[in-house]
Length: 502
Image (cartoon, rainbow, N blue to C red):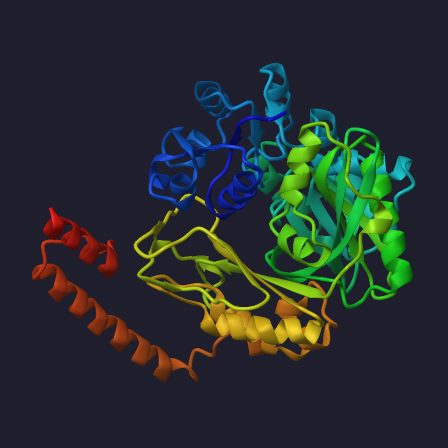
């Protein structure tokens, strides 16, 4: 059985994994880059190990450093979280060779499902419906033209490796096919080191719906129902909820069975997510499989009542699932909002900086997965996600109302965040009705984004408040022994009190 787990990640997901480990009674090791030394996940762990400079390419993405940290601290298992090395087949294989348990699937499943072209080929063989398109990478531009003529525009040019919207181009006109193929290849090469792209029919008014699966090493596989993930910006999710408003019980059952079949096709074990594109007629097509824990796993946990990290650890320990499909059901409705450090009214520009004040929402049905605190500086090196706000209600209407109340209570100053943007989404008619697609943000621009003229007065007031706040802080720093503005006032007082006691 696993005795110590190294968390090969940072931020909120590292803290979230550590919480389950603490409940189980398994000690954890936190790894951190130099800029993350004061981070919450470092403070929470029993042991810590610095793995290098701030850029992830010199720390969190270096397999040798992670393995060395595990050996140095005596960790016999590694949990990769999501992002970084979580879907790196070479990392999983290296763990096997070093005798370290990788809390995730084996290298074969990761590599098969990580390459979208290979995944499409595998799913077709397994009888899983895929979006019409190519099953080989595009190497000839003239061949690409022929394929698009056969499929018909619009089409999507997609990178075979990676994700997050990189290496992806929507083509609406034949004249744009070759430039789009070249652009997608170039971006894919820069982002993933692999310029392979393929062509897929574009589904009008698509819904992005994914199914959570769990599979043990004894041949048992179940799904834990769906998550609706259609509120996206730049092909990245902003809000997730479950259950989906558009699925009928019959379609939900069929999609769940298809997700299980997809996992079994690669002898999958662990937690994973099978993602589908669904059209307005509820036809669904395999999109990709994420061979790891998802950011939005929290809404599934809240509605189904299963701790997915605990199940990951149990599966890694070789234990069979403690439940079968018939034991699982959806209770109520859950919504998750991703809190980003970004300027949503300025093309979602990341906004690193020092957090001056945090007030998190509380109350019945509210969960916060975060890692920031007053005085903490958001680094420039990583994804701007700083917290996840999850609510639960007996009904979707109750969940929306609870989320609106929670967002109203949530206060973070010192940096710009997406909180006000999320508040507007909760008020949008399309979202409230549940009849939205992945075009939701584009279709509701006028409502979701601040007018540059209408809100100039409010911005002037905010600027004045910020200026006077700066003057106040500057005056305090001149009259105080504490010269570091990043240190919160309560901490400053606490340190002085400690000196007085001495």
